[in-house]
Structures are given as C-alpha cells and as structure tokens.
Image 1 (cartoon, helix red, strand yellow):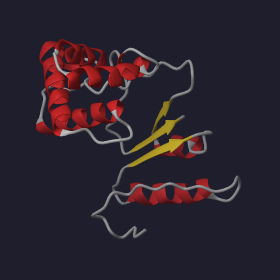
Image 2 (cartoon, rainbow, N blue to C red):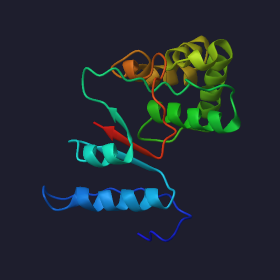
Image 3 (cartoon, rainbow, N blue to C red):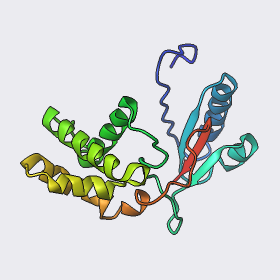
Length: 178
C-alpha cells in the first residue's frame, strides 16, 4: 500500500476482530484521501461511519430492508456515450455472470440490448427493458443472457433497478450501509 502513488486504484478491505481499530484506521484514510481531493466510497455494515459521514457531509445510502432505493443505471443518462456504454455493458455482464467473463458474442448481444432499450426509453429505460430486448433476439446467447439477468430485471433484486434514481452519486464521500 503506497498512499503516495496516485496512479492506481485505491481499493481497501480491512478485517479484524471487534474493537481492534478498523473503523479508526479507515476514518483516518478517508479523511486523508478527501483532504487530498480524492473520492471515497465506503461499504459498511453496522453504521460505523455514521458520525464521520455526518460531519463530512457524506451521502449515506442505506440498504436496510424496507427502504426504497433505486440504482437504475439509465437514470440521468442524457445520451449514450462510449463511456456510458462501456459502464452499462460491464454492469449487465457482471449481473449475468458473476463468476466468469463474457465472451465477445455475449458482449455484442448485451450492447445491442442496451442500445435498443436506450433508443426506445432513454433515461427511463430499466433492466426490465434490457431483459425484454434480449428476449426479442432469436439466439442462444440472448436467451441465456436474459435468463441470467432475470434476478435483476424481474426477480429478487428488481426493486433496486426499476424506476427513477433519486440519489446523486456525484459526491466525494458516499457510504453504502448494508
């Protein structure tokens, strides 16, 4: 870990037993990173960062049961840029296959479904629309991708990806509370 190297991607995972100082260490690293102009995204269980987040004006996104939360990646997307497409393809491919990479044909099929959904619905598109676009294609790949995307488009995770995203993710300090 070289905090002086600003070329890299600063992913940190801290583990340890209760009371060993994990949260204090991370609070120090968060403060240091924010003071140097960086961004911090913290995934937490147990509200360890609630006070720090409040003091620093962090956006807290709470995933507790019963909370209404939408992470629809199409919301706020005014036009489909190459960067937006790259992000959406990566997201959908990870949703479809968490344990493997997608192949070139699958990537092309996902891109086509995303493009079709966005051209029809714009920023109102959802993963439901991507799923339906995949089902409209007549190929083994699109059928397999639609089945794999089902938990996020129609199944257990659908509530997180349908509707308007009422959250602003363009902030320097965001805490995801699980």
